[in-house]
Image 1 (cartoon, rainbow, N blue to C red):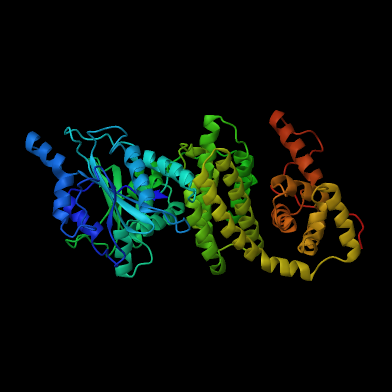
Image 2: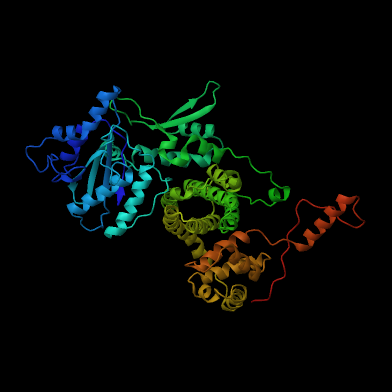
Length: 577
């Protein structure tokens, strides 16, 4: 059950005309009162042919008129409107039941607390089977205004109790981090103009798509302005950016003026302060060894960053700073999904776009993010957004598989913290990501299966699997992707790697118990790990000895100076064929 409190209005008679009228699409059938502050003697234009909307409006507005005549300054925001709707699958509710529900909602909101004889006047009008509208005038009988701060949270909590008491569909409790739902007027306007999305939804998608392309708020606004979004920055006397609003061309008010929406009204995490915190974080100083070992392409770099994310998020301790770091990494994960959707092959973009839109809800919670800790992941998203070309087949398969696992772990973290809406959003995103990952891996699987090793080699590799991951060995060997995995292991061994060690490392990076196709998971992980030849251990040891000796003085006789790149040599492999 959803109760959506509307912005305060000033025209009681006008709202009554809508509630008792035919509706915008003739959907108002049999409008009538089901509850009110004083049902006896209350005029009901839906049941009494002699009652009028004007009479009912005067009845509700009487405390407002008395207050205005006494204090002089008129009240102009006194109309409280709250539609209450049941889920489509809910059972039919009688007028009596809807009346009881309305009574509980006005009590929870503070409109008419239980036992308060001087509370505000209100009515509940039913004109359809699945919903009612509650109208109240927010001036009490004693002339005071009710305390409505936080009424949305209280009403939402009461709806959860109503669902339980009446056997209705159970929704999750709100946490005030959701984007604003489009109004009926906005949806009708979009339909009238032939738009698939309302302006709020359209602008939210455009801003989120622009975030991976910018490193400052100024860059973000410039990127939006260069596209199809109208940008209206707000600056101080010094020229500093103080806020911003955005608009959609053709979205005009009744006077023909362009409508602009502040970023914070579009979504809680798109306000200027929140965007600055995400974008303008100082990059930590990178160690020279990390620079030398950085993957060659942004796609591989993103996969490496996701591996570090896994280790960060799996710690669900109650430490506040740790929670802030987790939330930052999950927020940056959403940016990486969005950047990947923009640069992926056309065949995968639809699924990845759906995943990005679903995961947007998982990116924000009540936990304040420590954004600077997610710099590596956010930098990977920007590098992908600025990449000149898309990823190769194996790189794309590895990245999409890593995104699936990162989203799974993010959903688990949200669930452990009691973030029901965010965990549900992560689950929705996972479905789309998994579909994209399967599509990305399909060509690679076909190529690998076509050149599977001989039977004797596969038996030897199967023994490696039983030794490295004994608890999952039978599932892996029964997986239709096993022949392709055998090819990957044979290729890796030919490059100087040890299959047993690669399997252990791949299994350590992602647990396989929840993997529907464990062989596919191992294929992407091992291809990513073994994409370079195995290191030459002798050359590396010589380099380290030389570097150490140089640090303390002249190298000892016979020591070769370190070289920039050591020629790789393969480790001796076991005879197989």
